[in-house]
Length: 292
Image 1 (cartoon, rainbow, N blue to C red):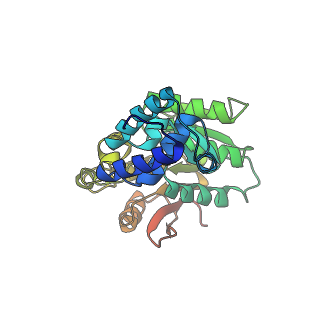
Image 2 (cartoon, rainbow, N blue to C red):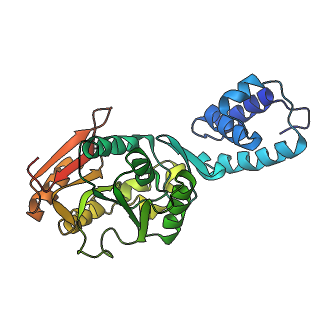
Image 3 (cartoon, rainbow, N blue to C red):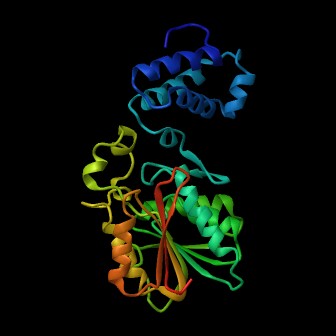
């Protein structure tokens, strides 16, 4: 960046052009988010203060973030936060960045849980940042919540996010576990929810560098055909789901038939329904141990 008096407007314009040259996805949005984070402002405030000059220290901090983004590091890892549902969640390279499309998983869970009158035991498998389970416990606080993850660092992140959002730190119990594998079968769950890794290994390597180079592969890689972990969860859930319980999974757009086959092979569940997202793609598998 050349040496002159920089304003918010000139910094944004220059950065947008620079990001375009580096083939950065969403160059203007990236510039706005990084500058707003640097200045401690909301994005809308940037436009209200277009002519505000930036101090030397602010430019230095912004330049460091700009260079990281030019290497295709995701904005969320640079700022350390990602907005999901109704809250801002702390994220790091140890956890998957929450996706807007996963809000459909949360919406579907809420639609199933809210009509229930009894207190339910609800567990999320693979909590990552905790975005789903924390948002769910925030929306419907009267139930008992458990969250698991294979990564201890992910569990730490989820705990921190829960602590930030809830005054009651004990609202969610977090456990390090490989899906349900470390949990006692003495406890049955009324609702199991998960957004497991479901991207086939060979596809993962072809994704944009923001994903393939920076996000934790363990949270994305679904094995050869993408359903390795989905199959494991279905098999394990057969031993943990209550007699009228529901297993809700986010899946790939082409994995509906595979899920139905896994459910049939388990010979445990009564029904399976694959729900579509707003783009008309298969996205959510709803598996029930009851007749509904």
